[in-house]
Image (cartoon, rainbow, N blue to C red; front, side, top):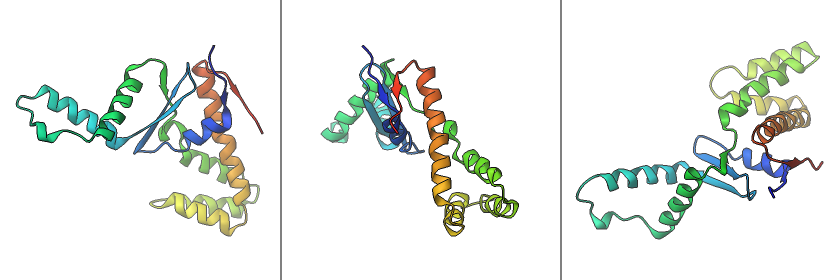
Length: 165
């Protein structure tokens, strides 16, 4: 019997995803596994070493890293593990942009849209929503958008879930 995933837990794990971190869910057990870029790079390096001749035994990896690499290998080679949506699937910039356009006050909408232009957009946007006193509105909007991405992913992967408010 497959587990029922708590939507809130899924979103918390999804929120960890970045360029440096990938998160996977075992759809049979409900176990989340976080893999860092460092471990994935170490796996690639170890595979390259294995395929080359004359490996120096002094170049061995620490035991803790070996254990993490073994877990990563299990995750990447087992079809029961599915990668959670990445930052491109989530597209937080688009979420911010939709929030800006949702504002009924045109001046506020314009100010928010200006804040998301160019380098540093995420920080400027966050500062602007706090300055304008709409931080609670933004975080509720963001949570709803993340829930939508999470629900779509869970449904597309045939994973049962519950939404506890």
